[in-house]
Image 1 (cartoon, rainbow, N blue to C red):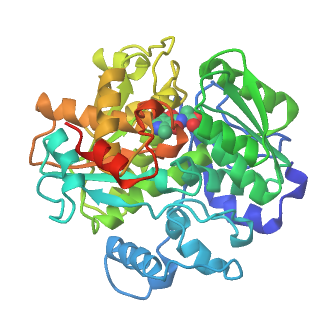
Image 2: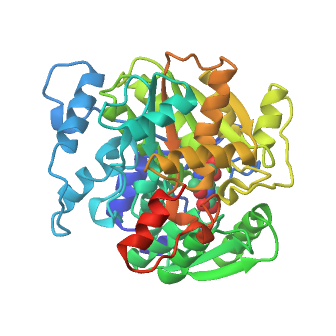
Length: 460
Ligand code: F0G
């Protein structure tokens, strides 16, 4: 693949390296071997490291670094939210990932593959911070028993999940190294996103799915976007192992969150939350946890933002797992003495994962933020999903683990009622239009006349 590397790409990436999260060995971002590297020689996963320069566009202003960064990002965010594909700079500023490009990846602009993504809503839904015009939304705050609650709806991304944030960076890297084909194992959202971005970039997409365990909406997306869709007779963890082997042997670019550049893109969720809160750190960030890429990414964003003085301190993180797919919770309960694995079982298929790849990255976030890991049952997930759905916001089951977890953590007083909490909703309601939705039989069929309607509406 490297034969096609442009001098510009090599130049741009010379400040980027990859560090093993287990043994700290350092590798260049692009090596001279034929195949990209996803793991250290010791087997550990890798983390992107780069030298972050002063913000160029505001370098003349004499302010502390953090203020310069905030000014730069605020200026970019204030451009009108309509973009033309003929104006690449505008497109980048309006992506909720590339707006922060100096902190994401110094990619040549012409290589960037963006829809654009991000710019998702941060709904204030707490008992105190929900406006009076939205009593429906406020019910979520009542359910959580929280005064200051925000929901960051990542289901509003182009393909309906947070995965687009990582995929724009992953597919951009694929383009930079000249990959012809990209692949992933997925519980459905990564595959939908990969298929979309690969189609845009004119690459072949190959996705490996655990047969019978992917919600219909997600499967439809990968088929519609034209991905070669391979159902595996096995679970996600087996599909993950297989895709790593396939990519290694067949020279296909791997785009699971094992790929550290995916993590860099997902940091955009964290930066965008900070910006939407006017660079004030919330007390808590709460999110569902499966393969543990997302908590690793958002945690890294906050860590870097502290280092650059964009914000003053880290929030605490709470990772929520389904009780039947809870290896990270089990490890947390024993102070991470041992890395646990389970045979995963939950109705929230997106997080039905028993052996998460980003364990070490995620553990660091929990430890450094004085965070917690909690588990919630499928019943608790469905009850929380019904609350989010009935409020008119809606989300897929895995996302509802966030609210179920918040409610549990508030009830046990780990989160105080007056703390400021941001919960991440990771996927769109339409992804899974079966689980937890009232049965279709509950719809009412009537004759097309007002008497029939009156009978239905006012029947005792
Ligand atoms: N929520 C949703 C909707 C997801 O699709 C996923 C992961 C998660 C939460 C968990 O995030 O893995 O970073 O801890 N979905 C992956 C996929 C596994 O293949 O779409 P994580």
